Image 1 (cartoon, rainbow, N blue to C red):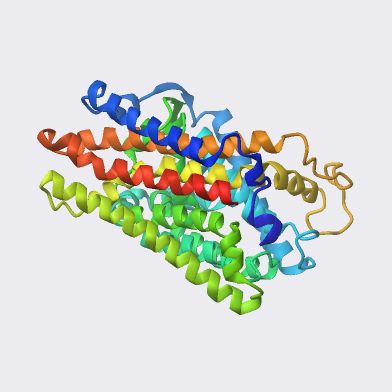
Image 2: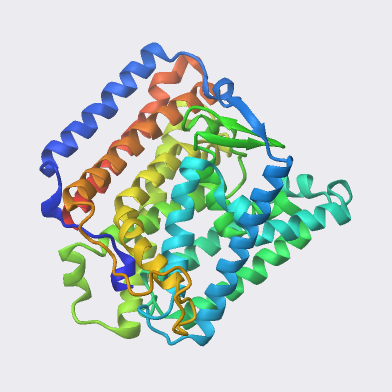
Length: 436
């Protein structure tokens, strides 16, 4: 995807040498685990997740906000599909690639990590689901009960397809290809909204699933018709344990990791002069291999935890998957922060003329992105800290979940495989950051 696939910056901009970063990060993880073991002796996240209620969403202001948000979401979907079909197919004139890769895939999830599940409040499919729930009734349609039975394997497959188009397909920035993908997503999400209602939609729409999972760790929450604030990450204790959640998270984590792999010199040597479908084939193998390796590492850690805990509970994979959500957020910040900052400017410029008709709706059509207002050193610090803090948060989340799930007499020993996994992912993430 060239410009849109990667952030801006280089290994020379990193604030510290790789050895110092790795030693510091691993030391922080080990110290955190020791401190947590001594000072954090019972689950706390469930209590903290209650948070502090600040207002309601069913008042006039709340309804206006939701209506405006969903109109904006509808506009994004319509413009993305329309431009993808009718506007010249290049990323300098066509807004569709940036709407998909920058706004929907990077900015919406990262904002969800701060403000809660953003996509829920701007998704036009949520409007369809709300209409369905009002007409059919949740009881009659069984939306809540049906959602509790829904697995996340379908949205996981959707996330895999998206990452394949983004990172493996040789024409990933093609607006025509993205229009086909948007069309399939619209059909899938519309069906989910009308068939299952709101709760079911959030277990079928790949973007809704990812935004919901990321948003659960944010400091702003919505519960029923109330909204409020709480400590970061504590809401992850209340993420529903659905079959397939671990697979969905590992696909995103693996895709983001492979994005880092493709930036390295040794991967460029592997690619050589391959283009077209030859490049697609090699990238596809690399993407699937990266996801598979991370999935095997995660499942191995879980099986070792089960052995140490003396249990064969088949839900452990999905129960402890939430510990990897902060890691996935950290990887996303590391790999896509500069993309959001710099390509986001280009997105706003293109929004002034979304159909390349010579319009200037917002007065920015003649502007150019400012690539110097944030230095590469700042970008590098954000990238490195994203990985390190993400793994530290993952240790805390995993520790709190372990207090609820693991037997007390084997508690410390049972956590060690998960800590080892976090340390491995930290080293690999920082290595890729340096090599990029």
